[in-house]
Image 1: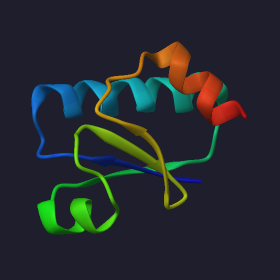
Image 2 (image 1 turned 30 degrees about the vertical axis):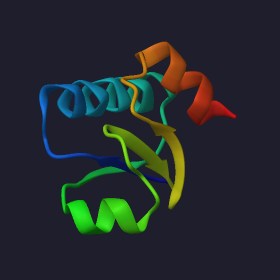
Image 3 (image 1 turned 180 degrees about the vertical axis):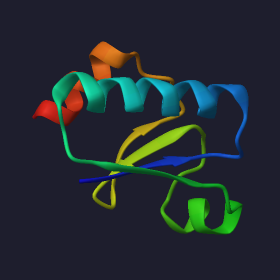
Image 4 (image 1 turned 90 degrees about the vertical axis):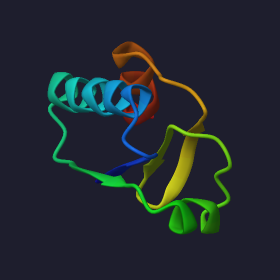
Length: 77
C-alpha cells in the first residue's frame, strides 16, 4: 500500500502524516508513507485544498486532518 500526504509541509500536513503513521502501525499494515509537496503535482491530481491523502494513487481526503481512528476506518476498508 502506498500512502501519500499532499501539502506544503504545514503543521496540518505534518499532523495528518503523524496520524497516518499511527493508523498504519495500529492496523499492522505494510505501507509506504510519502509526501508530495510540489504544488503543480498536487493540482494535477485535482486537489485544490491541503492537506490531502492519497492511497494507492486515489485521493481519499481533501482539506482535512483526519484522526488516527478515522484513518484506520478508511485504510481498513
